[in-house]
Image 1 (cartoon, rainbow, N blue to C red):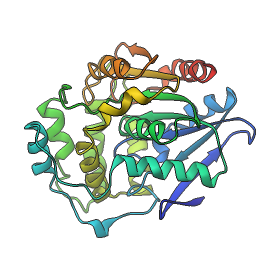
Image 2 (tube, rainbow, N blue to C red; image 1 turned 90 degrees about the horizontal axis):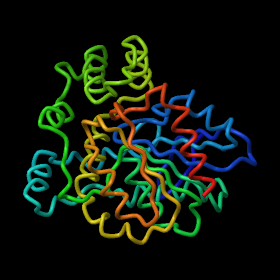
Image 3 (cartoon, one colour; image 1 turned 45 degrees about the horizontal axis):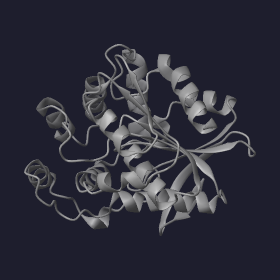
Image 4 (cartoon, rainbow, N blue to C red; image 1 turned 120 degrees about the vertical axis):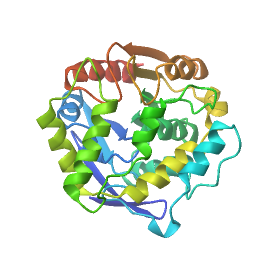
Amino acid sequence: MKIASNGLQFEVLDEGPRDGKPLLLIMGLGMQLIAWPQGLVQQLIERGFRVIRFDNRDIGLSSHLDEQGLPNLGLAAMLYALHLPTPQPAYSLRDMGQDALGLLDALQLREFHVLGASMGGMIAQHLALLAPTRIRSLGLMMTSSGARRLPGPSMRIRAALLSRPARPNDMDCVMDHLYGIYRLIGSPAFPTPEAELRAKVRAHVLRSHHPRGVARQLAAVVADSQRAKLLGQIRTPTHIIHGTADPLVPPAAAPELQRRIAGASLELVEGMGHDLPEPLWPRFVDAIAANAAR
């Protein structure tokens, strides 16, 4: 279904019991709501959650903002590395937090739980700052505070993220390109079978392929370096989950994030990369439910 928020239209999927504990899932850079595995969602529903997923702005079936033009990611990355101010993005991660809050208002949900992954975890932090009295618990997966002194991905990972398919208009080529990236950042101890991962990539591309939106989202991430200074304001029960083998957001980000949020708990998962491996779903669900009970 489509829901209006913050002047835009968002594709939303609302599942589980109407009287369940509302849990908003926020996905990461360029990822659509279907990147939350249905099996994981079902396990959350079985634990009493009403699970709400949505496509972030500029991706999936939500509003695209192509009129905002394309950012100069090369310049932004260079300035970021030099600790200099980066160009003003088309929108901010705080704007995306406002998007999420507007969706919950439209659903008439006064109180709710939040789980964000990667960039979605950054947006979730903004949401916790925007609505401190409404969030009952905050789950942050494979994300960071955005502090500039944190280690970043290797040059190999950076190059892969900034690369383009050899034939951008050939969907088979696009799928092969994305498959290579997802395999590169996935969990070495919990590898997704090739056929399953290719099926996920195909579903993603056929549902919506919008690389311009990904570029604008990435520009918003790069420009969001001041959030770290605000995280001491968060008092929401917070649990952080991070893989020890995450090549995209190195695991050093997790304890640093924990130090910034009062009372936050941290769970480091051996062999987990930057994905949501099926063998770990029960562990994730247990952790999310335990944090919600706080």
